[in-house]
Every structure is written in structure tokens, then in C-alpha cells.
Length: 110
Image 1 (cartoon, helix red, strand yellow):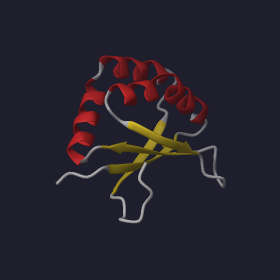
Image 2: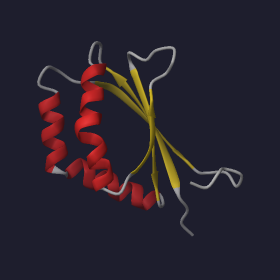
Image 3: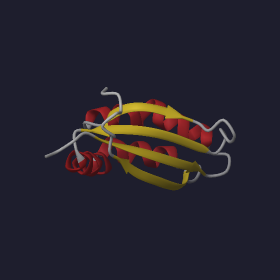
Image 4: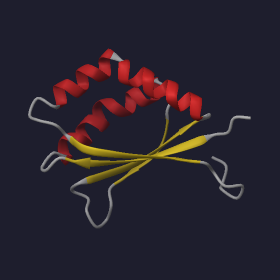
């Protein structure tokens, strides 16, 4: 049985590159996530270090759908161009952490 799954991703920006990260998400990445079936739950910056991290959560129908969505996203020529264009002044992301989360039986259904 498949169940809706969530993914929490934390992006650590290269020094001085957080504005470029926000621009890339705002202008390109969010649209491509939607195109590839990823549901945007929200984006946050930590209150104690907003200048170097971006945390966001995506939702998918199940883990297989998440894998298909990421494969399609990574292979999308529009993404590849946006990534290359945004990194002309150097890399934006120093590292990424990804955690898949299963909802508990008492989580609000959304």
C-alpha cells in the first residue's frame, strides 16, 4: 500500500551565495517542482542563521513518485540551463541534506 510521503531538504549555501539560491528557487526551481509533480509544502530559513540555510518540504503520493519526480527534474533541460546560468559566478549550494518522512496517524491530513 502506498502512502503520502514528505521530504525535508536543507540546503547550505556557499559563502555569500544565499541571495542567488533564493533567486533560483523563486524564479525557476519552484515552477519545475510543480511541473514534475512535487507538491510544495513550504520554505523556511532558520531564525538563528538565515544567511546560510534554506529548509523546505515537498510532498509526494509515495516514495516511488518522489524518485520519478526527482529523476525527471534532474534531467529537465530547463533545470539544467537554470542551474548552469545561476552558477556562472560560482557554485550556490555547498551541501544538501534530505530526509524522507512518513506522517504519523495523528498528523493533520493536508
